[in-house]
Image 1: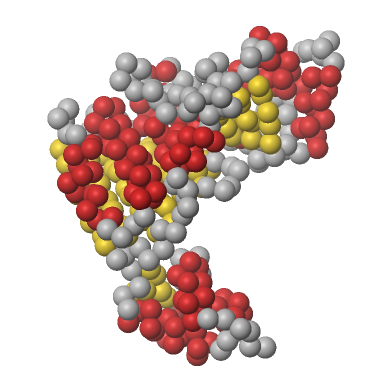
Image 2: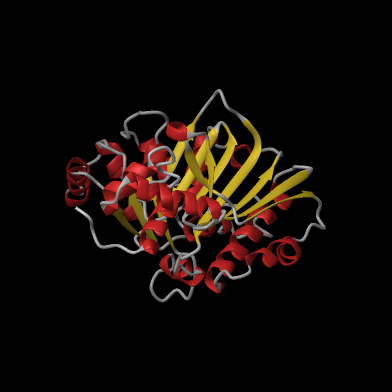
Length: 348
């Protein structure tokens, strides 16, 4: 049955979904709007003619991808005199013509923070910066061939391995140069963009806006020497930098970074169960500067008594000024938390 729709609705739907369904977009659009495949193909051909889509292949094997409106790449020598704000003003900001101010502000913050990290921490000789203006979003890429961000953190803080470094990054306030950095840049940047990702060594970490879980993938066969940071934001996003700063400031803190969210699943190595006090201490490390800590149990099926007791009784008793909250906990985890908090005699 044919449904009421406008050509703008169909066009916008294709643009928003083409990357998820590059080979089956005709079927998806046809089912969504109740129109024939031939009608969908007319939309696709028109978008290709307007340089919005780039077709590949022929007939049944044809697929489409978004075509950048603007695509630029820059190469810089990394040296102390490399000024991230000057790079922004001279090379990147002119590319944002027609983009609303709130998105430009987010990109300005994220880009300058990431490039400054390369200059101060990467130990790389060069850095490559990429900019893509696509029909539905902006992408920024900052790449270097230095020590690698996870290697650097692991080395400077004496951590067990690079997966532990990812956990520490998610908490925020982590820096290897306290005199010149607050350690807040990556945390806030990852929350401002729709998708923020880091590829370094054999680890790939991403934070996706609106999803409760931070993702960590490991591929031992594909190692990247250095670091690639990718930041993506929709051109119609209504998010502002102020929104993000407000969200992570506890009430009355006047933009102080006092509230953090920690994905508990990152404490695990592999598929191990979270049962020990040492695992809990790994999770709790460096949380003293915060006033509110949200523990996200997405992807965690079970926690042991000692793990729960260390967090919700021992740490809480030793830090009564820190409010520990949790989200995405299943029924078994909720029961274990209640057990250790309702019975002060519980220990192991």
